[in-house]
Image (cartoon, rainbow, N blue to C red; front, top):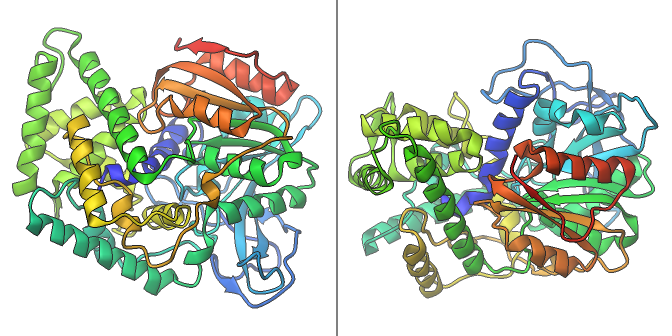
Length: 519
């Protein structure tokens, strides 16, 4: 299960990491507009979409641990933007897009709004920005910081796929099926999940794709009063930004696409490239762990450490580890490993989590997995693990056959038995609504320069996708970050921050071929 949803995991880790760096308990809020908002996420009766946002105090953002903050943060304003459910029927049914704003502080002239998408697909921009906005303090001096829950996410008609028990079965699946019986069980679990998505959220499923989200983002640009959209997209947010630039090239302002996806890549290729990316990150983690003699909890050298971890995870397939009233499966443990590989900052936590696992204590690995999966302490889930496949499968016409999935898995196993899977294709094969390849075709000819920044040690969006996206856009300007982790700006690297801040604030486009080495 873990690698199937690899890109989504960045959002959970991103929220937690950013909160630690910035303002983890800052917000009270989330969603609320003057005049009394309708139920968050509801589809409204036919009405002419409005471009007005009635801003008011935010009222429903939780901390990363699922608890309400101690007090409201007066810096945060929330509202809703009404958009068509189906853009082919602009005067038909509508849905509400939840939006958050944090006003510019100065000093200096306000440059407008800077809209963020933090990835996924399926990340709540409202929650993430509320927890993390202090990280972007330099940019906030000149911009209003704005984000939103894209359609199909949380407050914006968030996709739900059944009850907590269905979600538990789905997220705890093992990574690989090695026997026909295991494959049949995995297929049943995925079908149960997909059927629950249709049953619970069938009305919005056909309309939650990236193309419609880009259209929503142009409505948001109009609503905040900007002639051009200034945008900062991370991970999946780079695809959303690229699709926006393709649809509205003349409306592109200052654009940063960090940790880019290559939208043109098919499901099988994406699975194999990400499998290799996580294997590379894992090997770097092990080398870092054992560099001090006798210090690594996993073993004295890379070979021994790797063997110990492999043995531990293999045993979980037959004997899941009890953790209070739950069990740590191989799938959940692998998810915990992947979660901690997104950032070098969490490598020490991964060492300790695996070290405790080897001693029979799976609590830390399970906590990492829960954070990645959006599972709250009360056993309920955010919409992340439902929104992610919903958006991903609408964004592709691919519906792989069992034979094609088996080939993908076999090829992935050759790259990394630890991180191999059938990929997102196993879910899209069972998805209840058709998809389209429109979001996979990008060309921003005629737009302003778009900064594309890729990291050479990024496990989830490997570096090779950065120059490819820059080329596909036609107006892309490539920046290379030589460092580990998912996302260059959030690494805290001073060179990267200077390049991006100078571009966004002063409008100075980075010089061709610029490279930042990790500081």
